[in-house]
Length: 437
Image (cartoon, rainbow, N blue to C red):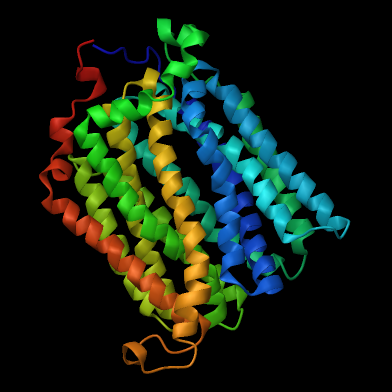
């Protein structure tokens, strides 16, 4: 039987989680300010989507090696390095702004650097969860991760939208720097367990032989491979639509940052509500139901969002959409934590992350050109298309693309419920602590 952790500290997990929550608040405010600034400067959706693309590109390149490193080296140190690089990049951007040298390409470059080290940080954190808490709390711990992510959205965007006109970049970036120091400080005061060493992890010479281990592990477990494919098919259209969310709303609300901030807060409130429900409930017995039903609920809500023409429709749909993601993501994470042994999670999660990041990068790369060159021109003047549901103008074309993506998300969840390899994967893939080594 695989070995379980000898001691479990929910206290340490909660301290690290709280540090990440505070840091996420600052990052959300900064990201919101960047999107406003970039849209005001260029007025192009491609500019915003490229920031996301360049943030992902380097991490895609280093993801194969990052999983091996996480399995072999101190995970706490890797998390601290990731946070430190992020705060240093923030300081550099602040200095460029103060000296009137800040340009769009600086966000591409710093996004690439931060994205690279964030890959190590997030992977080290994910692979440490199963060593810090007992198995029965995996879904709850995953839901707390969503609580941190969405909780930061309740206040951060609305606050950033308000403060942007008062304190501008300087004030918002100083807040971000302060929150990063809290995240790093939380790591200093806790002990994060390491997986027990094995012969392969002690032998550094084998590191290059391990690069394909995660992929081979997933391929050999057909249920895990099916789950990964379903996730890729879901997140590709999601990320296309999500990358166009800001330009769509700004172009349809006359650049109203308060509307944009209110929508982000509604998303945060929906996500927090969903995370609290999942944390208290614990999720379905068969987690795959939570994964697929979450996809279906998110797809339906985003269809309504894309069809909406007023802030009240957007706010309601955004709340309902975010309500589904903690159920989807917590259930998915719980499956991977239960099925993959802790001492190989870095490599397996790295392979999984690589494919999902490639999917996201493709989404970011094609979303802007599709919106600017295909869909926006198609609905620029002709209101008769699609019976006038979307109206005319740049925002109308982006909304059409957004709804198409949402329909694809809905279909992935519905089809997944009908495919036995996906629907029954928890029965066909044994938990890691039930495998006889």
